[in-house]
Image 1: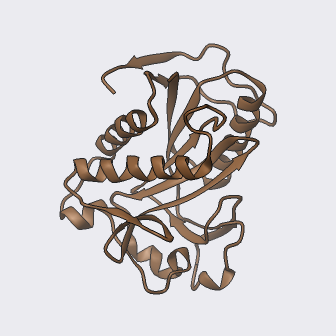
Image 2: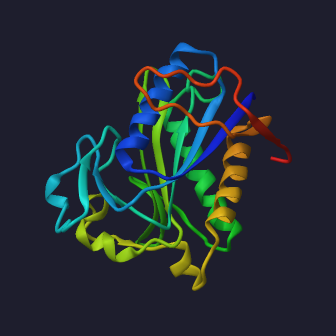
Length: 236
């Protein structure tokens, strides 16, 4: 398969990251451009999916609550959580349907966790990645004219107390955990990103992975860089 471009956005407010994704989706629909993977951490925020029940926001206190265009119910984003936003063209012959895309995304997260010695799994019909009754990663996606946005949130060293302000994903019986809690030690976020990128690229079959060093424009109807400055990666 073709190339994947990835970009680490650092810490970015949720509405800004959503606007960026929407602009990238529009640009990708207009231009012939590689698939894109965005890494980001958000400041404290609670988000509700398109059909999310506001009753599942129990006590947000000072944390902003935002209605989002993704699927799923309610979740929390904050420091220490790796959020991954793939901007992928599902019209590719190897990834035509959304269900397969979701399975691949789940598998990339499961294999990433396994590389750190954490045994996790799917738990149908519930979404996300689980360790028993404890959710360690939430998934909520959207697709616009065949291009994906939104994605996956993996708890690395997240302050799990913030999840008490909501009913995570609308599941009153579930608990929430993190990689740090499961392993009993601190994990460098950069190492988790590196492993996830490798697992994502392998699962989706990219022949080449490049890092984008340019700023990605966030203005309305902005275009992707015509020739982004990248550094190549191999061995995926």
